[in-house]
Length: 352
Image (tube, rainbow, N blue to C red; front, side):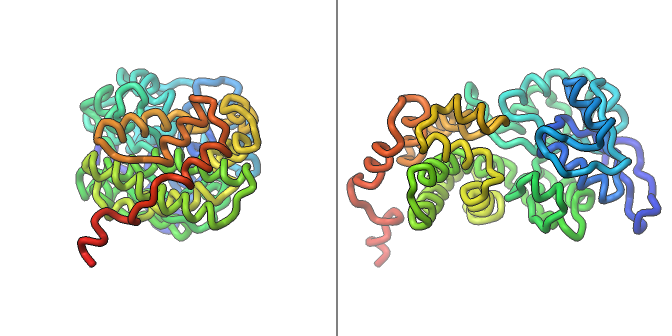
C-alpha cells in the first residue's frame, strides 16, 4: 500500500497503521476509538479549536458521542497538513454538505496514490454524484474507497458487535481496509460495488425520515415494516439503474442499514422524522436533533435521481412533499395508502 511501511506493535502482533481521521463528529470519533483499540495510531482533524482542545483534554467527544473515552493513542489537531502527513490511510468522515470543500482543502497536502476511505453517507444535491465521485473529482490522484453499513456511532464506540462493508475498485485495497478495521467486535466484509454501497447508504436516510414520521403520527410496527420493505424497493430500483448491483441492496449496506436506521433511536434521521410527524418543521427538527440530518440533504437528490431514470418512488416523493412543500405528514400518509392498487413486483403475473 501507499505510505511509509507499517511497523509491528506489541498488541497481539498486530500491524500498526497510521491513520488520519478527517472529521471529529460522532462517527469519526467512534471509528477513531475503534481503530485505536485495534492498536493503530490515530490523529483526528477538526476545523474547530474548541473541539480539538476538548478531545485532547478530556479524551471524549462530549457533545456528539458522550461516554466513549478515547484511548491514549488518539490525538487531535486543527493542522490539516500535520494530520494528513505520512499516513497509511486517511478516513474522510465529515458530513456530506461539507464534503467537497473539505476534499478541496485536503488536495494540496495529499500525495499521489494516498488511500482515502470515505465513511460519510449522502449524495451531492447539485451534481447527483456519490461522495467518492466527488472525492475523485477533487483529488483524482488518490486511491478512493468506502466503508459503510448498519453502524451507529454510539454502538461502535461502545464496542458492541457490528458488521460493515469495505468497498473498493481493487480487491487488494478492500482486503487491506478489512485487515485494518476488523477485530472481534467489528466484522468487515469486502465488495467491489462502490457505487451501490453509497446509494444504499444515502437513500436509506430518506426512508428513515418517513419511518420516523410514521412514529410521530402514532402509527405502528406494521406501518414501519411496510415503509422499510417498499423503501428498499425504491432504493434498489434507483441504485440498479445507476449501475449498482442487486446483491448490494439485499445486503448490509442496503436492507441492513435501512433496518437499523428506521428502527433505532440512535438514528438522527428517524428522530428528526418523529419530530416532523409530531408537527415540527424540518428546520426545527434538525435544531432539536443538534446534528446533521443527512436525509434532509439527500431527499432532493433522491427525487432528482428517480426523475432522471424514470423510476416511480412514492415514498421518496412523499418525504420531499413534507420537507419542502409544507404538506402535512398525515395527509401525505393517506395519499400513499390510497394510491392505485398495484402488483408487489413488476411482471409477477406474467411469471405465474
